[in-house]
Image (cartoon, rainbow, N blue to C red; front, side):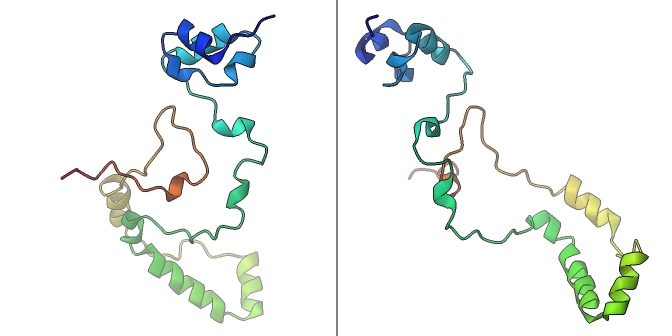
Length: 151
């Protein structure tokens, strides 16, 4: 068995950018590189060959608390929830146990038109990854330059 070099493998393929140094050691490097050169093929994530565990460097990072999206917080649901939580904090243990056994449902007075508008008129789509885009450590900390214009 004689192995192909990386340069020889790149010469055999129509798209040489897909050839990586570890492709030459596969059982059939030509087929592997042909598959990688096909359209709409998602690349294998780069962390497959790393010695340390995936996302292990994120253990010590302090996460910011979850914030409701603006279109939901505009409905005023957070103020209603805070009022209910304050009321629950003032309850005695006996009242809390009674509430747990026989809960009273439907006490929140929500304007359903406001909720409808929030979710069907003013909702903004979250930023999603595109097809074939692979997540890697620190991706959320990167600055998105797509909305900037040169000049």
